[in-house]
Length: 293
Length: 274
Image (cartoon, rainbow over all chains, first blue to last red; front, side):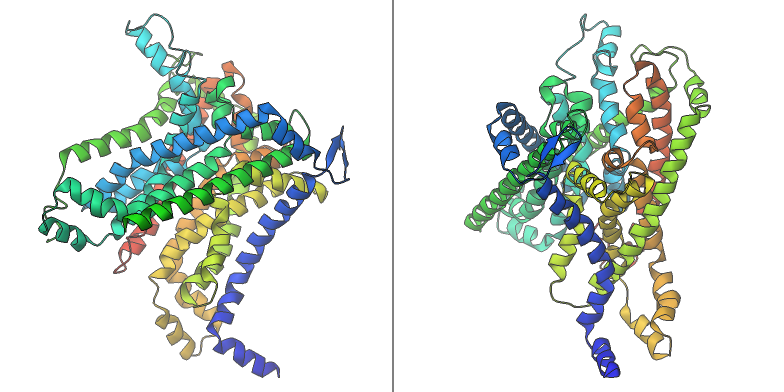
């Protein structure tokens, strides 16, 4: 019996595959699901000083929805992240296009150069923007010592604009890679066919290249939008009071405010909203691409 | 080469744009080393005298040594665990046909897109409810979770160009599964494994959010830097430290990406997927 089981196991490719994948999958599933379940459970609790009241209640959610401050911060976070995703994709597209179509030698070096900063310390990259945009930072002090301005330009640091610029810089690699992959996949003969049939470079781009690279653009915008909504380092360092985002609030609830259940409820609301927006976005872009095709 | 036709002929404006883009990526980061050699407590132009005193100050800082060792230990442990899990996962999904492959890969890759703060607070709640005290072990746990996707992605690229018939030949010649792995599979995917180790080490070494939530009094280097950012007189020291970290990270990641990409580029048909 045992040998028969063993034979079945060795014959079945899928079974062996599952066996090989299972350590990784189980570890990842457990490490993601267990914390997640307890996060959801905790969001129905109440904090009393340093104790938790484990009676289930919807009060945290009621507060999260009704409190105008929370709503305002959520809307601002979505707006900042949405702007950031749009700006980053727009700025990164020509770069990805250049490497996909115009670089023939040392392509690997170009790809590494584009993505290298992404792997280095996030904290330091954000901090370098604080150094640049600061009230007495590189731009202001530089312009002053050149005699171009008298007073520091205040709008540079501590504003939503500073957050968008910093985030766009920090997440550029997430935009470039998916767009590059989708451009690289395009069959070059399609472009030649379009050209032979009389399309100029502009028409060819809008009728062939852009539609075929849309999956990359959509992936890129989501890959930036979703994680940046939950960023709190950038707003904390360069955002100032007008640039504070929802994640700063979550962090405060697990720190100074010391109300973990409320923090958990805000975190879950944030994820639900981001998830819904992403699904709607994917659905809409799918409809649009179907219409074009 | 037919490819260099009217479609791919060089475009000067695009080339200029690409160079500007790279400048946008790199110039901001260069301000850290620039000001780290500036003999002034204020980070501002005009530059004063050249100095290395911030570096000397940094090297004599005891607490920094402690946090550096903490980060190295967490990084090494994370790299080893994440890469082992990555090897299993990458081998399974590239070399075995099995139903449900895509959703499983998607699940493993999820930490890439979940906001760091969500995973940070969720893990914090879990370990505190389980009564596990926060320590460097909990930080390592968090780092393994976010590093496995990077390890998998690196190794999948390497395994995809791998000819399985070589493994089958070894098995036919009487090697058992373990020996086949060590004598055939491992040497071939070794550059990928090395790339994954270097990459996951760097990610863990530089990671802040998980470490912030999951560490106790034993801080990692980024958490220590974060606490120093509040004191203006400590900023030049942070700049010196940051400059060194940046340079080392750049070199390590460049080597890892080069190892990984070179291996893939040698395989015909490979190399399009970065």
